[in-house]
Length: 194
Length: 185
Image (cartoon, rainbow over all chains, first blue to last red; front, top):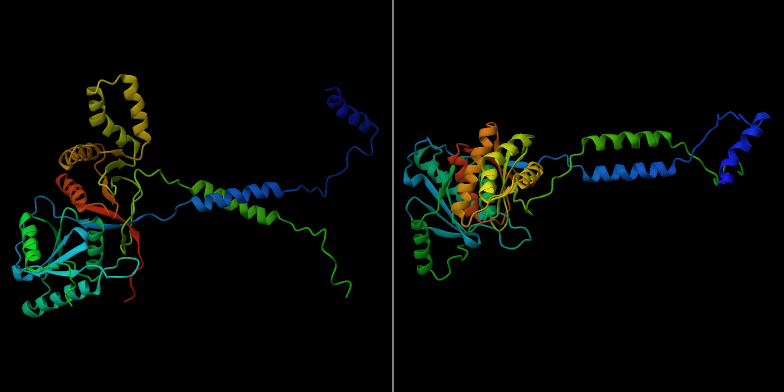
């Protein structure tokens, strides 16, 4: 204790004698390295944790409850049914559903197959050729056990193809029956129709 | 020759400008950082090319987990309080909790990102969700509904949430997706 208190006194008494006491600190330099280290550490931390990007969203407009049903000729309706395990079926009007591959086989990331794009664009052209107007409506029916990603992938693909006339419809028991009927008729319902 | 290559053992550099810039950036990042709130459930977002951005505020977020768990959350604390006051307080009181316990759970609820919507089957979940959505909208009518669902969630749950939005007169909503590059045309 005594030494700690004594030391500054000693120096001040020495200072009284002058000369040595006030060295002008012109070329004062401090080792800033630790401070800079900490500053950069924090800087890196904040740079890495910051999330600037807002999440992307896809907008969905359902018809409001007051809206009346719009009647569309059955021959202009392209129905797409998706059931469990990415199984997809398409048909026009009241024709029996035809299975097709919704996703490209192979590849590490599932992507919507070319077949699907060709189908939609082809049928759209056919309808346009017949009625001279772009009136084809795509009706999407997802089974309960279909995955959410199926919906997002298909809607995104339709948006990309600029097919704006599509709607979501509930997957009814009648739809299930039709697909079951199909399964009984053909032994391999998901076989790729080429 | 000997003049050109002086050995730089005691080499010194003025670091002041670099430190200035470092601190400037540090301050900037410290002030702009918004920490990610803890996630309610692990969500694998589906990929899409949609590039609309989520608005900053007035969000009513319904989160759907991979196994069909449903959570609802709003971003503003007053709305959270209103939701608590209308629905959850009653059910807690019915469960026989004391005022102190309710106060505690209100505190927790105010800070939580969302609350799970419970129910024994999907119908009950739908009813509870509808009630919570209505409460939230009553206290803030300009809420924008948003669905954040896992890509492997069953469509059944997603459809239920969409029908609830439709029923409560919010037919326009957003689905959160993760960005995917547009294919070259």
